[in-house]
Image 1: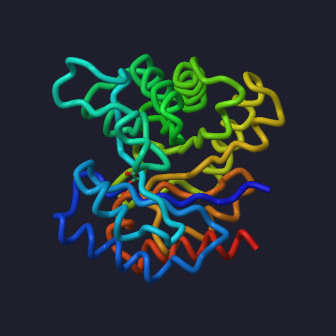
Image 2: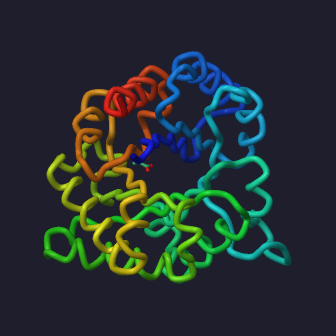
Length: 254
Ligand code: PEP
């Protein structure tokens, strides 16, 4: 039985006041949901204040990115070891990191290793562009992102890995993938993980769908047998929307 996992990626949004108010509203609306893992992922400077607001609620804080090295002359970067005392998870390889900042699969792999070394969980994002989908190479792209991204991960560490399938064309566009496409790719992710790590680890892997998830479509994604939750961007900035998505997951966990 995989516990569903819903994470809200706030991206580079919210003032400090907005962040603590949003965390407090989310806390009051979903702290009673105990059958879904719930994570708020604010910008770096709000990790500690948001963590204070949700302390003791069962909701955890995550980070949106990290650097691969543990310390050193890397001005402006943040090590996984600096995040892990405060964060349950670190997102790695988000499409905005890959496509806006040019992050490569090798860099993603280094970050995955760093997060696992730090003791935190990693949410590894994979997903194809529209051109890659249209040319029929979506699965090849995701297979390569998985194999390169998880190059340094050991079998023992895989219980701290979550994969988020996020088709690039669905992120922030309001145009979610169809439920069938999400299920098909989530199943493919599980098969790919089984080839490398074996069926038991693949069966335990949690796979989120991300890309324009909202209250009105969340339930249908949660019904997919290989989809174990959602990585939510825009809708996570609205506490009612985020709570509805968590509740949709909770309804499917019973
Ligand atoms: C995301 O940022 O990971 C995301 C899925 O964004 P949105 O829900 O806004 O499409």
